[in-house]
Image (cartoon, rainbow, N blue to C red; front, side):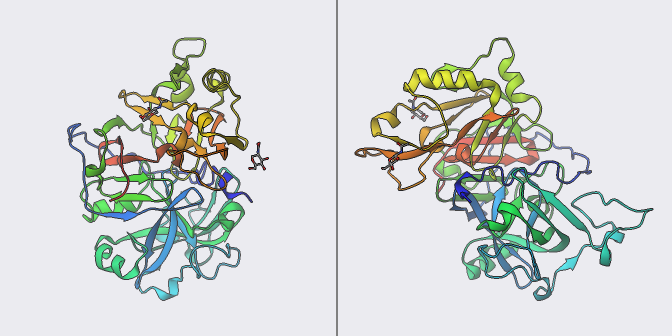
Length: 416
Ligand SMILES: *[C@@H]1O[C@H](CO)[C@@H](O)[C@H](O)[C@H]1NC(C)=O
Ligand SMILES: *[C@@H]1O[C@H](CO)[C@@H](O)[C@H](O)[C@H]1NC(C)=O
């Protein structure tokens, strides 16, 4: 399986019905006041996916999970999983029997937090009074398991350092103990996934904020192609920003989505054949979502013709998603893709972000002789709206300021 092309792995659709009412939030912070935090952990990029270390239980067991702003649950395999992948990062699955603080959520006590339990005459339908769940991902993977609550915190790859520095942010949290997984999820390197959407259900971030472990209700992700920083409780990278952070309202809904005002390929603006075209294309339906668990960028099929025509005008060549060999001179002709948000911020996706090098790496900022192989990882085939995946997000510090229902964005160096 070509893992580089695993795209929609983690954007959960239709998963679990959500019931919590939207919490009310204030907009008390002024635009120029950026919520900051001192708490941060490294992001680890493997095969275009960005991971973080989470520690679970007492004593803590370390897992490496994909940080996903396109889903809402923390899940990974637990002992004894007979149908889970054999090649995950960790040598062994999470073992609840080794943790003195692990508690299985009880259905009859209404502790099932992933979904509404289909009750049979008011009775819990599952064996052992457990809270069972099933989850499907758009690319076809499935997993199932049961809910467990234990203490959880983010850390680094170094166990001792994580205990010393990060254990103080640990909070009790319900996660999914997988008993089976299929498809790409079973084959992936990551042990699991940590969903970061706080809009309708509690994530680890919600619990940390409520328990006073972090200063603000939010987090930021700043990714490079091979590393990055996850800030918890604000951003820890203000000193690294290369421009003023701009804020954009977050829309209420199932995903982190933003409103788009214009879309340009190079200097050519997509307009369609009528007024309001861009609004229709990008802001209706699921809209334009920011999804770190998707590696690539997907743009509505509605602008395919216009996009391809602009591409041709600018580069002289045809737009496609096959491997191609480019000289330095040809690469230099590739356009920036500029998405203007409702705040007026220009989110620029540069060729170095959307052109992947499947084989050897040339440094696109320096010269190279002959050609190097590239594949465009922008797809103009999305049924509606757009998915801005991790390749669109890299080299920006993106602050999910949930407490103020806004998204902060600034081009940034992503190293501490
Ligand atoms: C690109 O170059 C490699 C050798 O460097 C060659 O094997 C491959 O066929 C070329 N691909 C295309 C699409 O021209
Ligand atoms: C693309 O965007 C970058 C970052 O803003 C800028 O430095 C560069 O000049 C742009 N390239 C083109 C061809 O406009």
